[in-house]
Length: 202
Image (cartoon, rainbow, N blue to C red; front, side, top):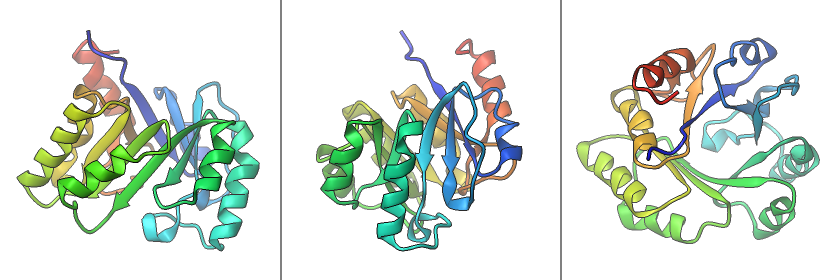
């Protein structure tokens, strides 16, 4: 039986939050500024560094302090794979952790990606890398077939289909945009909802 696919709406403003009605989960991108957190949906806290495609300008210490402070209001917290152990340990008592790896230039070799997943400290591992070739698609598919609790897809308009494909291979989330895309090839929430509905998955 097909697992439940949760649609995640990535929001960076109150206006976008108002457009997230069809989402199961809301990812609050607080690196873009303050957003009203009032919603009856599950919430992901994300404060992304510029190096990982985000908009946070402060120091890393300030960022981690802010994540710790805000985490009590969220069901999930997104932490990058190179964050120190202490922050994972501190947050593991408060929320489910999504350990994430982003690469906006390329998709590394399979062995490297497998190493990341094998050594995950979070409840879920998220891989979002730039697609360049069919070989990159095969890497993502192989990972999804081998591992559970994994969100993995390729960025780039040409590879946006991997965001949907990943869910059919076991990924628990499809990250969608409302308002404006937050990453290359991100799929739009309402059209993704309609597509899944036509397939009998909503």
